[in-house]
Length: 320
Image (cartoon, rainbow, N blue to C red; front, side, top):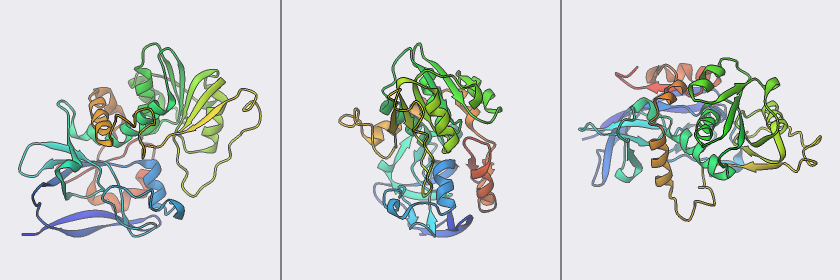
């Protein structure tokens, strides 16, 4: 017996389509997953959709179970939540946007009790945020600024705001993000009113203006953790002014490797399981957009990646 599945492929810059694929039935040690939700990572997936992945990064940028090669055609994505066929068990998988797929059992993680499937689609973003906090060395009582209120920046602010005694401010150019910041339990400021003298700054806006704001917020000998990835683009970094006089540190953070201080004890699976556990807070529903039907994704992908929603959510048959 064979099964058919539909998957989203980027076939040219700014152009996608749904392709029908044939699946072999699951063998020993494998499971068939019927997808319910997946989410878009607006930063990375926009670069993929627009064909802006640098050739030097083609190998490092491959996602788990990606098909095709950069730049095109390519099946990409890494945040899928579905039901194990024939059961009521819901799982998270690092898999491209596809309505059903077969993977080894060890490639999926069951959702913790009390975590709704739609919110679980944030797991990859939460894993990135968790790794960023590890890379930063953040501690209790610190003044923290997060520049960029997309999914990753908002989750960094949420986690930082839960550390005892911290004063966390989310900075974004969109005044509407103030409501999101308050829902997550942190402060908010527009760039012109961003607080200075911070002990720690995270930058997640993927813009030169955002990086300039992040550096301006940093206090004496503070660290600025850079979470943005610019693909083939270059960004002006204002390293004049007080950058050297204040002895600021610009630190990269990337989810592909576990933070060095945890690497001897943490596996990627353990980190992802912790990210799912951290998503059990209902306040995080503020990050989710109204689900878009999977069937409309080719027509709407560009709009979703350029739009204001921190985490565009895709719903599969019956969940839209």
